[in-house]
Structures are given as structure tokens and as C-alpha cells.
Image (cartoon, rainbow over all chains, first blue to last red; front, side, top):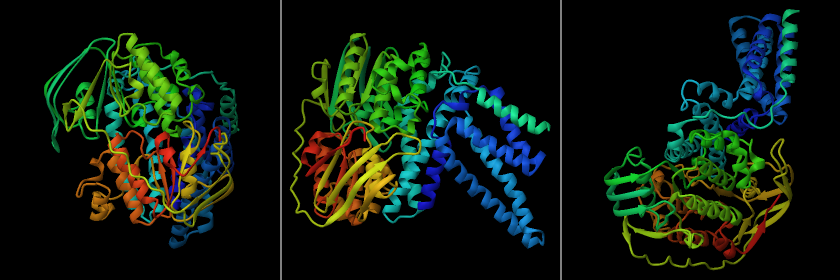
Length: 230
Length: 396
């Protein structure tokens, strides 16, 4: 259970450690093509594309939340190891080249997992809320609520695992405690926030303080575009 | 502003949770509601806020509340919708059709302006409570319902709370304040409503003073030397902390909101590794600020045997989730004792408890010290004064 608790803390640190800063504040028209290039380049250019894509993901982390890089690398390493090891094993059983399959899968999984985490890191619940507020003021609350509750649930689950591990209990007990706490919190949030949930953001939401420079993100986009074209 | 006559408010599992309560408040008036846990205080707030039916309850009588309502709940994190403090306050302003760009100034007024962009799950309980105050003020409701809003606040925070309510009342709002401590509200409220077993009463006997005897100091159960801690990329939370705890000893950890009290407990539990320094603890167990995270059994007897339940004044056969805050904490302490913890770590064990529940929890801690060393993170000056030693954290 210590490993699971550490994993849940690592996920918290890799994507939920920041507020609205860095590339989170950049417009969607810059973020979406950057993410698309990061996903597609490994398929188009092979190993060099994987290198470019991974570098871009780490660069986005560097300009948004450098303190989260170790956690992001750890998660990517775990995902990559899992997929390439199981792929290699399957290839071995089927009589194919285990090493070649493992390396190919790793070269695609590593940039994809880094890009996935970078996408979550760069996702702005504020921007999503503002887009949804054009549909209805109440809809604008939901992206924020998800970003509010997901890390809280992970944080509660982490503490439950730490506490239950100290009691010598297993994962089942930890999850049961975390679930009871989550149900309690769900009821509490609904009760305390009903007026705000019903009204929603009637006047939209302001951009958070200080407009960031989107130049670093645009540089990444330009570099990826050039690599893709060349 | 409020005109209510509640004949009967019930839940399927608890008929007659509140009976025969009348309440009339004009603009600028506030009522203080006192009573033990389970006396119907929260049911009253639910009835006034219109959520009783959504909470599975039923209401006989009439409740008329003119204008908008805002609830500050007992559990600070339940009152937060935004993922950062700035967004939570902006949401309040936007929902009440006011300019959300003014959010900054509300955070500054409650002393958490520098935390504007910190993800809310990283706030301490006291910081979360201050955010509740900022968001309630930003919403500018006509009626404010406060459920143990002073719990988790340090003295500075309590001052801000009372000042804010006074300002709110002078602007023509009405407030229903549930608090176990009437002291800060003298001169603020126009009337007091005392509830006992779901019905109004003229008075209730004072809570008994908890029995608290010193226990002989035994072997060493924890030692911390030159401890430094920070999360990746953040400021130092703990700087050069040294501490030793022996069996039979109670150490209170004090300090303003966000000073690292809970972090110190988690390090002693072994859940966080110190950035620098040495930490040793023998068989530690921690009862978190939310004791549900400790209680993994479905029912009370899954956590402690019948004799222990009876010793701690706890019911047998009840689902843990349906227990009051005080009962949950007492059960967690009883369960920790049953498991033979050498070091018991208690995070805010008396926050938000009525004097009767508090007395029960304090006595439970007194019993536990006969077998364990105890470290308590608390804002409760009464509890701190009963400890053998206190350490003060502040800015690390």
C-alpha cells in the first residue's frame, strides 16, 4: 500500500500542483496544435519524433511547473516500463523480436504519456469554464468543480492509505475509508454550495492576475511545426 | 428577513430531529444557536437553507427566507467550489452578479492574498476557513448561515470572522450563527436559541469539566532532531524542529493557520520523508482532522469492542458515517488504543465540538496517555493548557 500511496502522491504532484500559471493561461489555439504535434510526431518521425515530442512536453513542464518534472518523469517511466515489458513478453511468446517490440513501444509510450500529462497540466478549468458559460452560467462551474474535487479525493485517499497502513490494514480498508469520506464530502459540498451551483458564473470569470507571456509556448509550437515539416 | 415556524423536521432514520422551533429575524439581526451535538442545530440550518428535503428529510411547518442565502459549513473544505482561492471568490462574485475582478481584495481582507493561486487541496484547514469567509463576503447574501464557522481558526481568524459578521449585519443582512462558544458573539447577536434533543429549551446544564490526570512519564516513543521539510518547489514549511515524546506525555503543537502542524504529524507517522534531519517514532497512529479517514469499519463494533465503546460513551451497532463529529473522534481514539499505538497523533481533535463532546474527547485523550505518548495539533487553548508541553510553529 506504501507504493500506491506514493503513486497517488506522485500523480497529485505531477498535474495538480499548480494554479493558473505558465502555459495554462495561453489560448487554446496555441495549446491544441502543440498537443496534436506532440502526439503525432512519434508516429510520423519515429525515434526523432519521440525525442522532439518528449522534449516539448518537458519544456512545457519547465515553463509551467518545473517542480513537477520529477513526478511526471516517474509516472511516464512507470507507464512506459509496463507497456514495453508486456509488449516484449507477448512478442516473445508469439515468436517475434522481443527487444525490438519493447523498444518500439517504449519510444511511442514515453512521449505519449508525457504529452498526456502535459495536456492535463496545461488544461485550464478557468478557460473551459468561460467557454461553457456561453452555453449556461451553471455549466461553467463544472470544470472548476472537477479540478477542485479530483485532487481533494486523491489527497484524502493518500491520507487514508497512510493512516490505514500505519494501522496494519490493507487497501480494501483504505479505499472503504476514503469512499466514506468522499460521500460525506459530496453531501457537504452540495449543501453548502447549492446557491452558487444553481446560479453559476453569471458574469463570467475574470482572467487570473497578471497576463503571462505566451511566447515560450509559441516557440515550442514553432519548433514542433518546423521539425514536422522537415 | 427570516420567518420560520418549524413544527417538525425529520429524517427517515431520525424522526423528530427538530420540533416546535420559531424564528423571526429582521434585517440587521442575528441569532446564536447553542446546543449539544445532535440537538437539531444543523437540521435547523438545513431547513432554513431549503436543503432539508434534498438531504432526505421532511418538513412540517413554514419557512420563509427573503433574499439570497449563503452557508459556511462546519467542514471548511465543503464550502469551496473553486480550484484556487481566487477562482472560488470570483465564482461567488459572478454568481451574485457582481464584478468578479474584485476577487483579489476579498482574499487580502482575510489575510490569504498571497495564496490566490494555490490549489485548494493544499490549503490548511484554517486557510480553507478564511477562504470560506472571503467567498461568503463576496457573495453578499441577504442571509448568512454559519455552522461552527470559528472552528479551525486561530485567534486572528476569529477576530476577522466576528468583524465580518458585524459588518454584514450593519449592512442590513441577517445571520443564524451556530457556535459552541458564545463568548465572541456577545454584543453581536440579538437573541439566543438553545436546543436540547430537537426542541427549544431555556437552558442546559453546563458541560462537566473533563477529568484529566497526569500519567507517569515512561519510555521514549518519538524523537525528532533538526527537522526541515518542504514540498517540491514550495517554501520551507518546517525549519529546524526538534522534539522528543515519552509514553504518558501529551505534547501540543500550536501555531497559526498553515504553519505546518499537520505536516509535522504526517512526518511523525512516516507518511512524509523529512527534507533534512532525523525522525524516529515507535508504532505511530494518526487520527486525521477528518476521522472518517481513520475509520475503515462499517459499524462502531468493527472498530472497538463493546467494553471500549461503553468506556468511551459510544453507541453499539451504529454506522460510523452516521456518528457526530465528536463520536467519530472518540471512536477513532478508542480504536487506536485497541491497536496499541505507542505514539498517538491527533489532528485538531476538539475542533467544532460542543463542550460536552469536547469533554468526552479530552477524557478519551486522558485515558489514551496511560498507554501512549500523544502529540496534538490544535488551536484549542484549553486543550493546549492541559498538555505537558507545547511547541509553537510559525513560519516554520
